[in-house]
Structure formats: structure tokens, C-alpha cells
Length: 360
Ligand code: MRU
Image 1 (tube, rainbow, N blue to C red):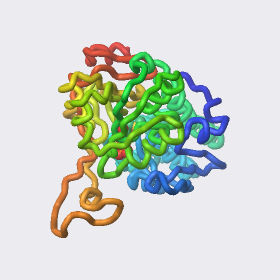
Image 2 (image 1 turned 30 degrees about the horizontal axis):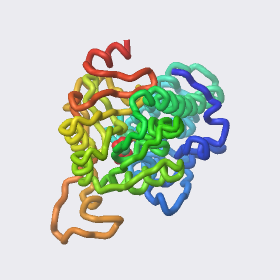
Image 3 (image 1 turned 90 degrees about the vertical axis):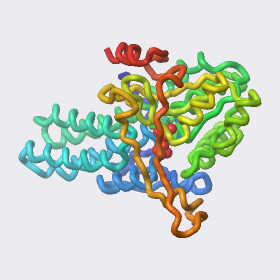
Image 4 (image 1 turned 90 degrees about the horizontal axis):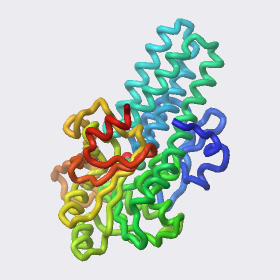
């Protein structure tokens, strides 16, 4: 993958709306739980800080939690580097890696980035401690820089799929703050806007965390991209009235056969789009494709606390004693997807065959 560190040299927050900052061995994360009304940055310096930030959704979105997880391995190395026996050091790192991966199980970018860090450290195990630390820090920054570059590339490739004057539906937040910067699905939307395609976005509010209402609407507003917020249940009606021309979403994990795990409600949008003959696109970097998972059936789906459903903005709305279900992702089967936009090209059906080709 092409690593161009320039994307990290300028002000990545202003230019790419990155949700991370790396300052003197401290990781700063934009606290996404309190957006859009408060823009606050939390400072992290241990693997426990990283685990909690991912688990509690300070940072969310598959690529963003992957990059944060890579910093978690770096913090773990800072602790373990005192160990003189390299085998013991690597054992400690592996234990911390397993701990970090457990923070959220569905997005494969988390384990992908953590494994990449562990492999790098393993390969460079003979280096002097100071050089090993430097190399690990550089690997973390590469993962981040590569992600921004991948998103920019997806934006320019995905442009071909966006007609002039399109009304585009998106679900959840697959924007800059869900990634290293620039965004996946919203990256394609941003590229289309910058190409003067006169697009307009419908953003599903995305219960229960309201990523669409709080984050996507905030991001698009900041970029001056016209956006209209709708309740999740409104999309079908608008499709039936020909008010939506295409759907574009991100992904947390794409199986080898092209089945896609993404925010709960994505599957519903895909079924609706299929019924109304509307193209349904997924934009995701290659790091989201998990070739070791044959199909969506094998993707672990995170189920979070039912309080998230029983309450609205921390205030209880359901009666006491009522239970709720809260699976936070669903699986969209490959036959409902028209194309997957990656930085290495647009993948069309048959996905099993074409994903294999991409990896060969
Ligand atoms: O629970 P979240 O907010 O982490 O879920 C995020 C999504 O489902 C996004 O669509 C996905 O991670 C793609 S992010 C570019």
C-alpha cells in the first residue's frame, strides 16, 4: 500500500477531519459521544485507555478503531520494552493484543491493524530497544496515513458511480471521523460534491446511537454538502416516491463472498433498494475485507447493552421491566450489493471470484 506521510504533516483535522491527533507520545481522540454540540479531545496514554475508548465509543467506525488499536499496541510496547527477554516481551504483547481486539468484535480493521503491529514488531525483534520503539511508532502512523490515502483514492474511483444531481441515501456514519480522515462512503460523497455534481444527501438518523443525526449531519454541514436528516423508517417511503437515486454505506467487515457487516439497519436499506431497483454501493478499504471469513454467517455480530435501546440520549423512555435486543450490526448478503468501492478498484459481482482476484 502506498504510504504518503504528507497527509499527516499538514493539519489533518482541518483538512481531512481526522478524529485522531498524535502529540508527543499522547494520542488525542475527538470524543464522538458528545458531538455535535461539544468538540472535546480526550488524551490517551495506555492500552487500557485505548480499550475503554473503543469499547465506550469515544472513537467508532471500523478504520478509526483499527488505527486507535494500533496505537494501543504501541502503548503496550512502551510498557513491555523494559523486558530483556524478547520471547517474554512478545508474549506480553500478544496478550495485550488479544485484550485490545476484544473491545469490539465485528469491525475486522481492529484485529487487522493489531496483527499488523504485532507482525512488524516480531520481524524487527532484534533491533535495539529505541529503534524498535521508533519503528513501531512509524508503523502506527503508516496505518493511519495509508487509510487517509485509501479514502481519497476511493473517493476518486467512486465518482464514476455517482450521477449528476443524485439524491443519495447513507446510513450511520462512514465519514472522516469513522476513519483516519476523509471518510469512505462520505469520502465518495465528498468527492462527488467537490466535482460539482450537485448532489444531495439523505442521512438516516441511525438508532440507537444516532450516528447519522449527530455525526453524518455534522460532518456534511461542515463541508457545506446539502443534507436532510430522516428517521430510519422514512427511507422506504422516499424510495417509493423516487426521491432516492442510490444508497452508499461503509462496512465493518466484508466476507470473502462479498457479504457485508455494517451498522444495524443497513440490511433493511439494501432490501428496500433492491425492491425499488435502486443501486446499493458499499465503500470500504481493502483492510475491511476479511478473506479468512467465507461468508456473512461467520461474522461475529456485537450485541451491546439493552440500555442503549431502552433509553434515548441517556433518558429512559421504555417502561421499567421491559427488555430490548441490541445487535449493533447486520449482514447484507452479496446479492443485494451492486458494487464495492475499494482503493484498489471497484469490485462487481460475482464477488467471491472478484475479491479473490483482488487479493491475488
Ligand atoms: O457502531 P459504529 O458507530 O462503530 O458503527 C460504524 C459503522 O457501522 C460504519 O458504517 C462502518 O464502521 C464504516 S466506517 C467508515
